[in-house]
Image (cartoon, rainbow, N blue to C red):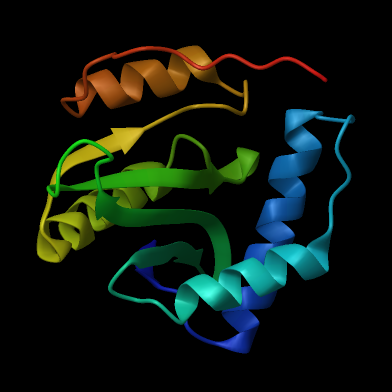
Length: 151
């Protein structure tokens, strides 16, 4: 299992497929999936490597997981915070080191970017208890919660 920055057109295509799988697993049927929009978003973020981090976990040349995050000032401070807004590992690769390696890679990137805090929000509703145990084991503390309602 290797973790690296996404860079190529093939990487982008694999990330779009991972995003589709994540969307299907979440079961958020009130929203449609737009692969072209996902591709454009990934391309925009790849164009800002100092601000955005796009990592992927590869096994045998195929992406089995991905993480997308950002480093930006807090709204109340000029200090940088790093936030993950997409972190997904294919179900058949959960329990491997993919999720941990992606998180450690983002932590290194965030430190290098000058971030003082790393924030992880879980909004998918998938494997919440398992993700909670993993994050606590890696030194994260619970602060707040995620809520959603349809409009």
